[in-house]
Each structure stands twice: as C-alpha cells, then as structure tokens.
Length: 166
Image (tube, rainbow, N blue to C red):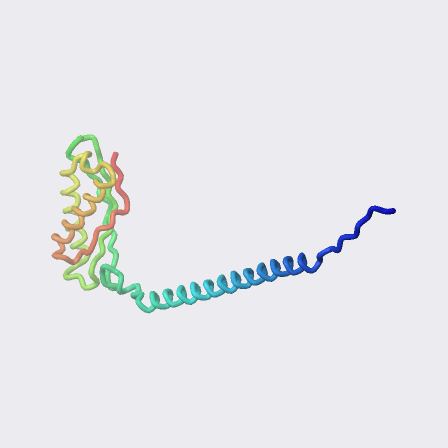
C-alpha cells in the first residue's frame, strides 16, 4: 500500500562528469604553471644577457669625460661691478675655469687676465641680457668663449658658481 517507487540513482554518470572536470582543471593549471615558469626563465635569461652585453660595451669613466683627466679646476676671485643698464643694478659673479694641466706661463697671471676680461664684459651687459635660464646660458657661453680666446684654448669651460644681480 505504499505509493513509494524506488528509482535507481545514477552515481556513476555524475562521478565521471565531476572527475573529468577536475582532471581538466588540474591539467589546465599545470599547463599554465609550466608556461609561466618557462616565460619567467626566458625573460630572466634574456635580461641577464642584455646586462652582460651592456657591461661589456660600457666605457670607462675616463673615456666619457669631455676633457682629459689631467684637467684641473681653478677658482677665480669674485667679480663685482655695475651693469650698463640700469646704472643702479649690480652683478656679483663667482666662477671657476677648467684648465689643462700643462698650462703655458704663470697660472696666476693668466687667471688675472681672464678675470679682467670677464669684468670688462660684465660692464657691457644690461639687465635684460641676464633674464631667465637662457640668459644665464648665454652668459656662460660668452664667458667660456672669452676665456678660451684669452688663454689661447687652454681653458676648457667656465663654471658659474654663483650669479647675484641686485
């Protein structure tokens, strides 16, 4: 009298579907991990080869200098003078020059000649010549050119340490 009907449960079909999914998931995980490890190894080897190649091609510090290692720095005395326009404007310049080690003649005499030439040049400048970064760049280039001319090429570069305009 009971109305209960027994239906057999299919455990084998669900079990094979679940285990097939798990096997595919494990297989994809292993493939992804292997591909990631292979890519990491390739990138590591490539980077190491590039670094070693650049180190072999790298020049020494002395090769990259624009001047010889025997070049020395000579400080100049501070220069103070008025500008040509406006007359109440003053400039104070502190600079150094890069000299060759084998300088012809007395360095002190050459330094005084360069300072005198700089002072004469500074008196001809106006305030508008010195405005902004480009004005300072032009000042540095002009002073370097004057120093090279005065010393017959023994000065490599003029280094501006400080420029004060009041």
